[in-house]
Image (cartoon, rainbow, N blue to C red):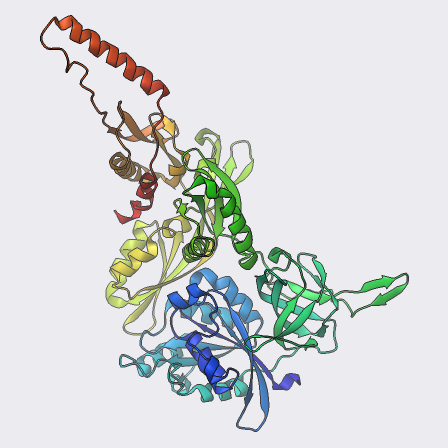
Length: 611
């Protein structure tokens, strides 16, 4: 199809503002999906997405629409995730488009992710079309919310479209506006072939399926291709478009969005954000086939880095091999997940996994338990630290138990984030108090409307990974929303807090904390562990220590066996002899005995944030 009749656009919004429902109505209106095949959240293919009502993976679909000018246009729609953990995926999807539909809930108004996604779209140079969704709700306030959106994007609020993704009201106007305002693709159809990979998935029979947006040239079935960032070379086994099922075609030309299958079995070889080009291939001495190879990659490629780390251990140690196989399969569908083997004295064999955020961690753990029938124990989430030693050596530490000896450390740097919190004005005090408790530095405040305030804070990532979002929601009665982006590594006064049971450190209970909070956390943790660890025949000391310095202690008192119960009367020396023998036995038991740490004790660490 001629490029002038192609329109590529994304739907962006805060989580639960109706992106997937609007996508359903567009599929119905353009008759892409038959009425008998239609279901709610059609593009959300995973069970977890449908249960939770959230989009986890970006989904692409091609539709044809006959506009009021009588011409038929080819529209490529990409439905993106709305949660802050998947911002990288949203930015890659926007790079594949020329326009974006900004969907805002007419009842809830502008939220933190709305602001973040708007700035992403503006930075990418996209034509932004704002829509107020859910205007059919009794609690909708279209005038107030239109004012907020108008102020956000700097446009008059009268021109903002009012629609209902549920009833389909106004969806036709949205498509007309898209065709009128979103520019057609501007790639060179005759130049060297270049395409952007904006998503990928794994099929156990066909290998890696790369979702691509062709920018220049043409990709044909059977051609040899090369990924410019990773250097991966392969042949195109199959190529086609989504409508919304995969539909094979002979080629994809400049401006089109579709999929490409190479038979590769490793998703990391075709990374999201990479540039594909055709490569010159020799089929014999002196003969050359295939198209012209591009030399300049498309902009914006960067490695996606895990931000949150935690240990995953099987509750039954026999399941270790099954967990490894499950992670190997899951990482094929989710290239953002990283993992490496880890051994813990207390928990046995497991894996240290890296995630984009807490929701990503929760979803991966739930998928492992559901899809692979595993029972898992997750350790306390932690972040990555950069450590400079006194001898000048630089280390990356993902696990608190790997932190070097305090005497050898020159400086510890931790990741900081720039957080944007939007809340009603009456909760400003509660939000500020929470951020200051978490070592936050206030960097700005902006009124979006007379009732809603945007607060900006610089916060350590380690302070928000556990329960910050839960606390934020509870202190603002559920009205606040949070968005954040990484701002870099900064030095902090951090210490490793060890837990010792009967003098032996328990590596799985170690944590890296700020020095100011270490005493309070150590005291709370030892108190919780005292209630969880079973009593022995001898006293078990539980100590929280920084290096060799013990900062808190609790004792699990011993059971007392009454060894003199059988002595009725008689000489006192007989009783003393029995007690001395018991004392010797306890001393020996203390030296060779080992305290077993029950699973509940590890949950005590996760409950620290509830205090």
